[in-house]
Image 1 (cartoon, helix red, strand yellow):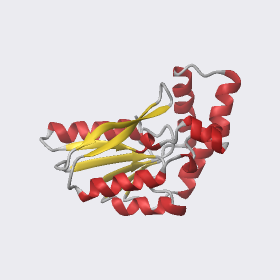
Image 2 (spheres, helix red, strand yellow):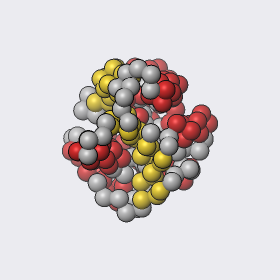
Image 3 (tube, rainbow, N blue to C red):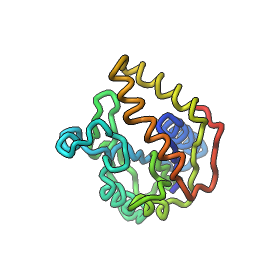
Image 4 (cartoon, rainbow, N blue to C red):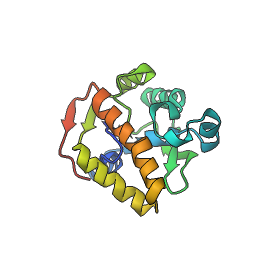
Amino acid sequence: MIGIAGPPGAGKSTLAEALVARLLDRGETAAVLPMDGFHMDNAVLEEKGRLARKGAPDTFDLRAFIDILKAVRGGEEEVLSPVFDRLRELAIASARVISADTRFVVVEGNYLLLDEGRWKDVRAFLDFAVLLSPPFEELERRLLDRWHFYGLAGEALDRKMNGNDLPNVRLVLSKSAGADVILPDWHA
């Protein structure tokens, strides 16, 4: 199991998909397991008063994520995992199959190396961990591009960036630990 961690906008999904494609081209079996599928539903986040901070560590179903990591690590049967649909801002249950015979599973997400609370437990499931760590200004530019693409502007964009994404960027950059490799110049 290979972990690709990093802040929002670092290019984790792009690198994970490229790595899996390369492994498949070489005749290996490989799959991506994205952490984003474990976002709590908006209704749950609203009930908890955390919808505006969707994407912060406490807005993920960490227990379910760890359970899936255990099942994949066990390799005894296929595992179904959720996938996040960014356009609709929701997780789709059982949307990805990871076969029991998959040799490489590339796990990607913001908090795989977060050195806080139960997030510390995630690192034990990873055989190798990469931390993507582009400069803050580059991450800010990428996130602005992302949200412009999804139609955010004005106050909504400011809330998304300054009230959520950039605090998450700072947290990941300051509280991640245990990477085997740090890539400060990764360009998605």
